[in-house]
Length: 251
Length: 282
Image (cartoon, rainbow over all chains, first blue to last red):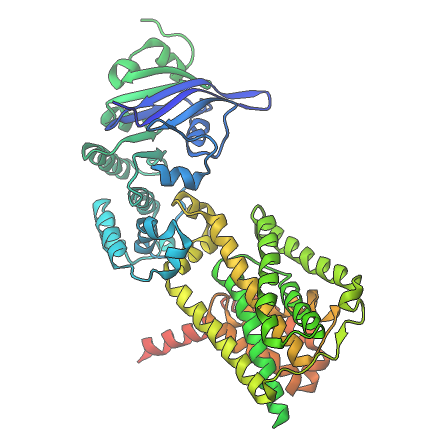
């Protein structure tokens, strides 16, 4: 079976600093992969290579076999990526429902000439309501984002990403800034989405939740791929523990 | 009666001009401090063509196309700049425009082009024509605002990075806003040339660009009726009140300042809030 996403030997240098060094990662359909690593491991940089914000000096990124390099971020989104960002960015002048409905209208907004002649929003509003219900925001659908707490906006990011019907959902630290119970319930949601067939790459610092919901983890250290495989096995490896805790570990 | 006709005609031209900027700045959130340049392109096109014997009505589409083409160029150049930088870039455009026009003999240089023929409409017919065009563009604006294109414009004005993450081709939509807005400004310029029978480089400079921005801001950025009302009001004020005419820039700037300070959402915002308050009370 063809992988959903392949990152092949990607290297990114910023001046003299090598942020990502020959990293490779393969994501298959239906995977839920936890992408972990200590601070400065180049996680965000690799994510930015996938979304197209950072251009790699070497290597390739393929989505279902087609190269993404040279495509702008909006083209990559149209090709099947969706992104929930670490720093929540709601469209502040719109309600949550409108935020999601706009993403649902991708078929209408891809061509401005079609957008100009389309007025009906009922189908998109209905689908947006379903998605908001799914992420537990039904009651806040008509609220404005500025009046809502962070936990809601993190879920809005997820709902908006789902609205794009992605082949691969990229989640950048969705649990950061949430309290334990909020984090746990959002992690449960991520697990359910995956169980329903969505392929997900989850960058996350909250190891406890990653270990709880992700069958597989990908560990990066100092820009290099350190380990990739079943979560429990990998996190028991001495070199992974060393990367996280520093120094040597005596067995 | 002749005075009222002149007044209403100028008003209609100002409304069309202000609504054309509103399409770019109000709908799509792209600030422009050089919008008068596009009106200038339209005005000079009509003036030069009519001098060469082309009938007025035939010059309007040419004025729109030329202004729109310059709009595309400026739009493409502006795609990489935002906010304050876009304001400075567009300001540069209007200085460039005036600077270039001044040096062209075929455009009359410093003196401009005078003695433009009257159209075959007659005074009243021309007034009706201007009103019709202003009304048509207002209706077009309202329709776009309600469409999915308006929805996308809202998102770009709100946060263009988010629009990109939602798969929207921001550059394409911005260019469309620039083309539509600048072409409409070209038409307004065409009408201006016919109204005054004279065009000169000083009529389309930085001051005029700020004046039209003042109309948009006083009316309420993005609100079609608010901008139309403000443009109508601000354009006739100098004609009706001598003091305003003498101190036009002072009055406009004071209005601009007060609006930004106390009611950044303009007349439209003030009215909307008052209506809400009255409804809540009853």
